[in-house]
Image (cartoon, rainbow, N blue to C red):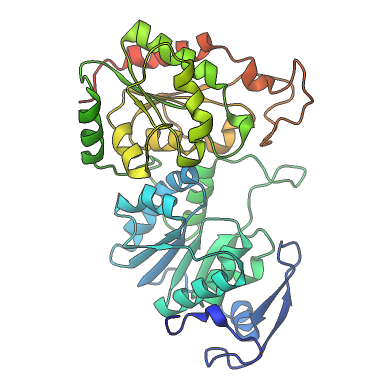
Length: 404
């Protein structure tokens, strides 16, 4: 193990960085009711007030765990970069999230988060401590992200006061709540902007932006016989949240055939590696052949972004692929089932949201809670192909320019 990484931390014989023994610190309301933390850090948090707007040299941004959330954070992160243009900004998160936003000139170095458990937590905190972080911006609401910054002795630790982590933050915001005191439905894009604006930074540009390379798409499309004179349409039938978000695969197949018959479209069926088995049903149910079917070949975020910027249109479930399309300026039809679109409002005039008004929704559940019967998963089972096709054709008609 490299030096100074506290993966094998001995709480009975602490290293020199912690001059007093550690003890169990209770954290009410957290999933980790007791964690071993050093008393000096608690003392430091309770007594030291952060500077208002210092010239930070080293900034850590802990990114959200979901691709879509990370894309929605890009307006806030651009403003952070503008405020501290010469600071070194580290982006920490899951590899797939880092790959999505890393080419944005927002961060200087990408840091994959360490493994789970106490060992991974302490290893990550050791890395943070060695970087001498002046400001840690915690976009996730998790206790763990705050613990990493706290144990890593980041001087200013900014985040929302949730998950029992308030004592570990030097700057904290209370999340929006409704009249009953429950967490309010609030757009994630604005949620991240509010956090950055609490530093006195104005976020004037709310547009989401990511970068994509042209070469990966060019190489793949050359192999397929792609015709630049015909519209390229991507379908995204999968979703990591759960089956309650998924419009039936046979409907996607019927939609693809209709777009080919009516618009001579070339169809890309997108699928993440863990979605391939389920998404394979789309091409099997089609009467035409798709141009590309990622249920049958390898995919990556870099390739997805590259292909997306060549498309005229995306039709997708409520997933991170939707946010990638909007950030790249691609027209999108987004199909909502169990989830509330008000959590992810994007302010995009070239997007069409399709959602049925059902008495049980939006329930925000991963699996439909209703028993089998005519009302089971009705939010998506009752959504017909004609409705989605009409939204897609409206966007195709309004955007006749083919992306070459």
